Each structure stands twice: as C-alpha cells, then as structure tokens.
Amino acid sequence: MAALLRPGGADAFEGIEPWRTLPQTLRGTQHVPLRTSEADQPPADTLKALYPALAACWKVPEGLGRFERAEITARLSLRRDGSVIGTPQITFAKTPGDTRARDILVRATLDAIARCTPVKVTPALGGAIAGRPLALRFIYDGPRGQGI
Image (cartoon, rainbow, N blue to C red; front, top):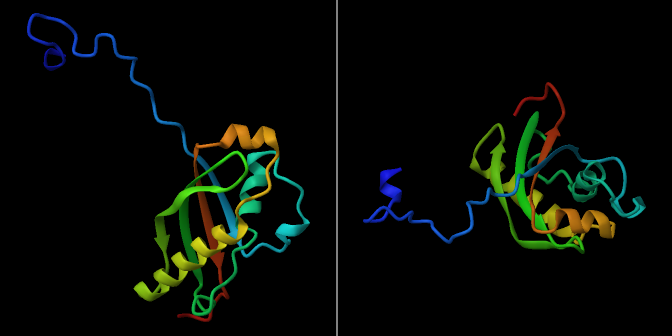
C-alpha cells in the first residue's frame, strides 16, 4: 500500500471513484448446426433463448464436415436492438487437423454471427444485455468414426 501513497501521506486515489469491476461475461454453449430456423423464432426474451438465436445461422462449412469434433468460442457485445458492437473476437478454437481447418471454423463462426445479427430481442432483454460481453461457444460433433 505504501506505493499507492503520495509523498506526504495523501492517498493517490483520493477524489477518484472506487475501482469498478468489469462486467461479468454472459456465457452460453450451443451444439451446431441447429435443427430450427431462425426465422421461426419469436424475439428472444431470456439468455436461454438468445444463444440459440445467435447460433441459428451456423452451417457446417465445406472442409469441416469430415471432422469428428470442433469447438470455438466467440466473444461479442450487442446493442439494445440486437446488432453487434464492433467485431466479434475468437477466444478459443479447437479442431483436429491443421491451421486450415481452424481458419475454416473461424470464418464459419464469424459469418454465422453476421448472418444472425441483428438478432431479434425483446426491449427488456436488449436493455439487460446492451454492451455486456457475451461468450458463445459453438460445438460441432461431426460424423463419428470416419477419421480425419
């Protein structure tokens, strides 16, 4: 604590608001591709309904269909109207195979988010999630036993 004190004993943070914590990341996991169409869904009114609405546009990209399992996590923030703030960031990607497979998975995920946004949300959910970080994990379980 001595390093935080100015000469003469005054607190270095005197008059400054107390430290605020970063907003907690809202997390969800979706197995993709989904079997329902995004167009069939009413506006999401809960987080449980939001994650499938964001994942509804994910399609198995050419070149990834042969893999047994792939996982990827995208971090993004939405506005009240369901549109994306900035560019979603990929925070985790796991594919069996080479970097080409990872690149295919990343592109498929970013394209899916772009196709599904602005996502339909109710005004109440839009107000609750606006600007908060969301982490959406996509899990693709491909054909089993066919190898790479």
